Length: 121
Image 1: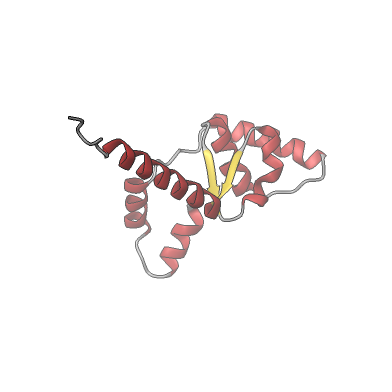
Image 2 (image 1 turned 90 degrees about the horizontal axis):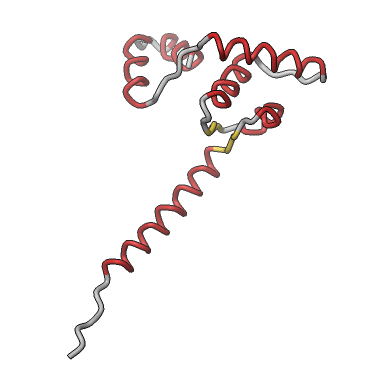
């Protein structure tokens, strides 16, 4: 979110206004002590295994882990090291495909349920 707001500010937009829009659309999770501590512990383990990840990705991933959330991202492979800690991550493209499949299935089921059988006489 920081990078997004920075880009908007660079383009001459109001970060405060953009933040307000984001809050209307998304549930924004504040950076809590629990997230910071868990991120530090996981980062320590990753570094001991010679795995590097940007701090921002670790914080996002750990937030999803602790909040039992599905992380939807353009680059799910960047979060692979966090999968062993319970991260559920999916690409945006795959998420949209699965969502479309559910919509089609739901529409078909609804259509079948609405079809009335002919009256028997």
